[in-house]
Image (tube, rainbow, N blue to C red; front, side, top):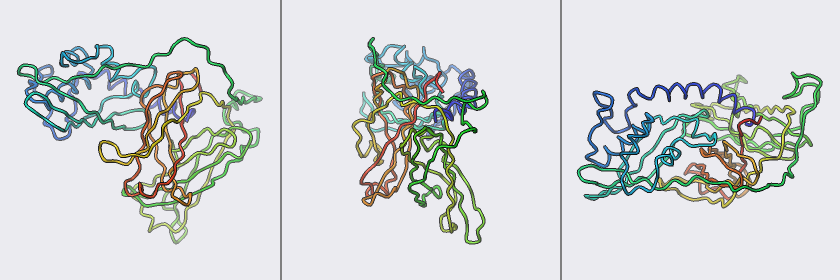
Length: 379
């Protein structure tokens, strides 16, 4: 992922920049709401909590920060810079490269003077669409409704010296062309240690784990081909980003390969192929996975949540969590992943959550979490 993610960034970030610069255009209609108005700038009066929240989110979508901030309640505890950073992120985080695509506000509770709304926010990002869920309180002030925004407190990093004790592997080659994935030395020895194929509502899924059995780091990718009863290939796919691509010696990673709209009843065999290349790598930054717990979130979904702690002295701009889930026999029954859209500053933590299919939540007896990481300016 340290190598693959920048490639994705180059392709998608340009599109997001164009989207940001064209923010004066009409916003997309929101789910379940008749959005839009005749002239840009003539916003419908916030006479209901739903209209007030819609107005606010349209201004956020268009990055009209002055008007969005003026629409907040006077009881809000956030300043304008904190409000902007809450939405736009900082420190090269995934949120910094994202654009608000659309939103779906729904009422939770309402009185004459106060309302609680839940809004499902859809972001377009360089790694694909991401959904965020926020609960927002609104109050009536005179004849209009306004959102009460809590104080946003970005993490601060005190000045200190962090000792560097991590392992590092450099790749010395005879030519500049071989500095990544060297071809003039033997590839690292990696092995698929488990594979499980299951049906889902979206299609077939092949998942399992891979281990780097060598003493050198490896860039790993797993491919699978579904074969029918006649020996013909139905489809072939790769693990893409649902794997920790850079494996240090003896490290294990989950992998997941999706085959959309394919039913396993058509499949007679699954051919697996793992490819590895020698790459330079280091064991830093070290990210600790803390306070892991299987639980049910506010939407009733089964999730594994916890905190990522950056134990190093370097900023991790984007963190990608991949979790494998096991039944009581140790079999991998699911692999799930999710991105943390806030940067991990040195010695700081951020929460994460990955979803488990509700049908499998009762089967899960154990889990294993790995973290992909990407830092700007580092390969």
